[in-house]
Image (cartoon, rainbow, N blue to C red; front, side):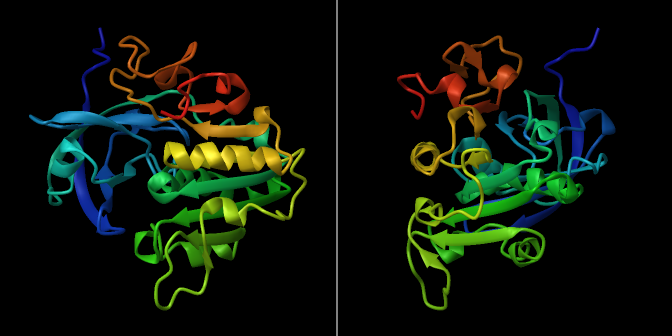
Length: 269
């Protein structure tokens, strides 16, 4: 009988520094851990521990996986010290990803904040492979400063395929884009907000005010998809750490529409 808690070995092939605190880890993987965009995996550092992450790579590539990780705690701190050649473990994938087929024929707005662009990168790769199936795709992304922008090399390429606008909270010499929170670039959107779909991923406070701003612009709650990455420990809906109202984020999410969870008192905690 398969042990659902037993990770599969993966080889760390390369590491790319995105910012001073964010790195993208490139793994050689087993096809058994293929994922759909929006799902997450539990990444294990042998002898240290494990933590949940949403892959940031193209789901169509089955023998490799990329995970973009911010240094924020004990396990992530150890990960940031690793060198290529290490063997780690991955179990999963878990959860429900983005319902891509429901997006067909619609206008799509993607809003990311900080390292929240990582799961959205996987979504973008999925959309790029079938752009003709969507009326329009927009990306709005905000970071704390120009130095904190992830995927700097990719953004110009994405701009050739879809409508991209970026912003930073704090200005810096040489920056020519918008200065202000990500909500400041959600005005006068070139789409039909009442019928468009929004996908949001970022820090809780960013998702909170982005959601409110989107509804001010005409988006309805059932069309706002949020990546609710709570403390997903077991990945199987057993431990209860990721309870979100009547939902388990690890099993029913991580992607949940706002109408399902909007009445939760501690939603953004």
